[in-house]
Length: 571
Ligand code: DGJ
Image (cartoon, rainbow, N blue to C red; front, side, top):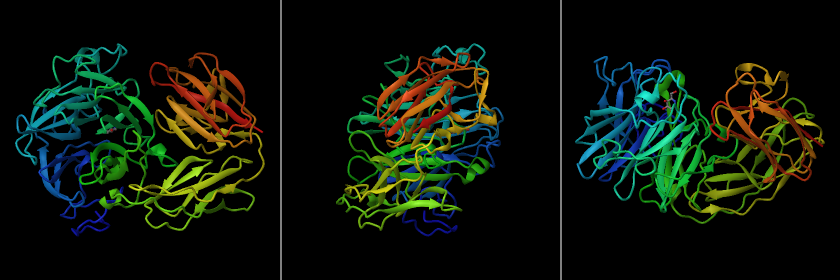
């Protein structure tokens, strides 16, 4: 996959996000996919989007199958499930076939594929199950169905009428446990809730009769998560998911459970730094354990969708290692399997840095930090005041400016994925200006997780003014619940003031707001509705280094557009 030009020269490295060519020199069409390992070979199944021109024309070509013995060079075995000409078929080119996954069933000796089948506009939302005798197919569709008729109390006017027809089935994945039991994870309840269900012994249906908590469960309830990518390590189950923003990338979350059916606990964002908000422009699709590497060595498979030309969507494969029951995900420009070979921790780098200026020495626009390459390091993690702020595999990084008057100490550690971290580098302490009243909407957060879309500043979505009650605000933050924003404010500020509430132009939803000063909660509101009164807060924050603003809906993430209007820190 070195692959800058269409030629069939062997690939030596993985280049996440670049065009990845098969052994015929053609871009690999296996989107929303996963791998199956069989007899020393790998099969990569995914959506063939050759016929997709843009996000409005979702022409189904079929499900592709590629084979490799080194995970780098992939031979196209052709379509293992093809589109059908009958307009009534769920595989007709006018329909939608997404996120196909295949397991081998040892009892029946068959290969079983599950996929999300849909109609244009995503109004059909069913599981498709297909079976083949050979890994490369041909697969034959044996079942098209919804999940279970679970009444989750959706509104009676729901256009998809799920109460009558049972629940919908959208983004999905399969998981085969060591005991031979298989599970399907799928998005349901009008996208709001992720389900997990055991499969019956031949893997061609849900285990029936279905019983909540016994054969299936609501794994992530009202969280609006997609792109489930489950895996197992050291007796625990893990699940990466994306947010739900159509083809646009968003923040990944990691969850953990003692059993595939749950309970699932949110471990937070595995990516850190400026790219975390969009997962380095990728969306999870699957995880596989790296063969021949120490236990806990995995690869995160993701899609970098190109909505205007879906067939040119890219594959983002990133290596990661489990440590202490969790992990981080880091974007790398290039890697190969040797990254998992145990090695000693690298030596500490020597850090240099300063402010960056654009047009005038009076107006810094950011921070630039650099260090010489450290032998044995395959990446570098930056810390701001001891808090992880970014990762890079380069020897330089640009970070946003701290707040005026905030003296921030930056350090860097060299890392080897399979060798741990160096000690801290020398600190580089930077500061500009003097503390002055600062709107947080003019400052860069250290991290900004929002339940849908991105953090919006000084306006609402679609450009309208931020409105609380009957008043418009020119300054403020709008973050879709659940949201979690962190600002590094040093010890330089003494008060935080804001007017909080839900955007009046979006009457649905509710949110509780909280403020933490260095992990100590200093404020928590009751649930506030868009129709309710906005609330003014004035909080002492003297001595605080990290200010954390959270807004969450106690019932559902629903439509809560949380506003921190006139959010100001004062010296
Ligand atoms: C996000 C899903 O993860 C994709 O598989 C696809 O369904 C897009 N949404 C469509 O907008």
